[in-house]
Length: 250
Image (cartoon, rainbow, N blue to C red; front, side, top):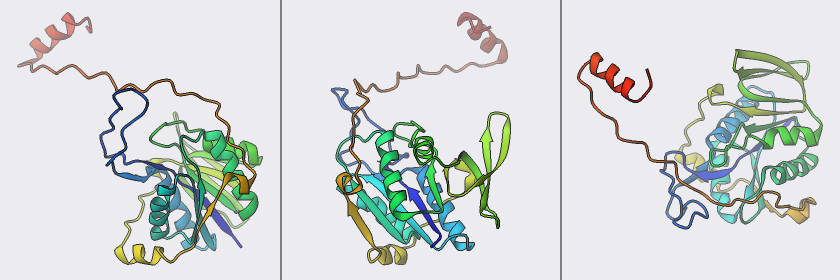
């Protein structure tokens, strides 16, 4: 079966103002809206479109996270994924552990294509996709803004790079990470949310997959951004030039 595996992450909703705990040990999440990482929603939409175009027969969504992450998996199922895999984990999980976990799921599911968001909006590491490709020893195309599966069993990927756009053709299976301009994720309808409750959602553990999580990074402290100084109102161009000169900017 031609299968696409999509990885998603549970994050604080990007529209929520993040507040740091008073002791600097993390961010406040009590009562805060949690959602699917926006780049991962784009990855899922990409997988669903490939399936709708006949390039795959099944889209499987997977996450590594706490029990509460089932809510985000159900949302992914409501978007159109066929099955969900939930690897239970408490506390922070490092990108390398996630990559090793996804590799274990790949060995089990044998997907044609693995699609991930290019980064998560909580830590902005942008490491899981490249690490997974290296562990899997398969091609990768990162920051994808265009994706097309070709009849010869390869994929054409348009990448956003500093100099403009780069077009690659890569053999499958492969890992692709998605950029913002790849697509606009679909709106989830109420009837699809109801149907999603009946779709398969399997819970797994690291031990079942043969993965041993290791803590290699230690977060020392969280600090909020330095507040920006208040702006000033100038009445004309001459006054603006004077202010800029006073600040040493001209």
